[in-house]
Image (cartoon, rainbow, N blue to C red; front, top):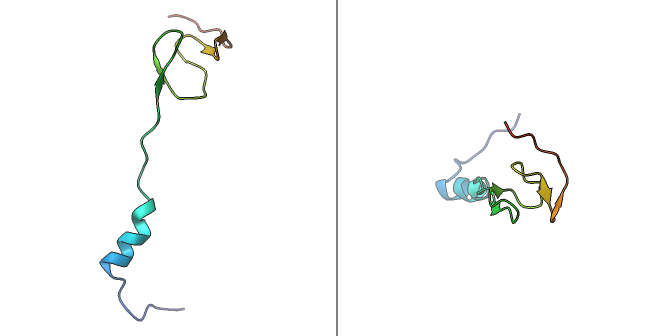
Length: 60
């Protein structure tokens, strides 16, 4: 089994991990009810997508 000959430097280690950061989830306001929702998804509050009601939502 192979072993490293030299210790991995802090710079090389951090460069490798530069792309591992968690990105922020994008949100936007629903044009129908104004609730925040994920883009390109049906609004969970009112069931609208693209100006049409796609899902029937029960109000509790």
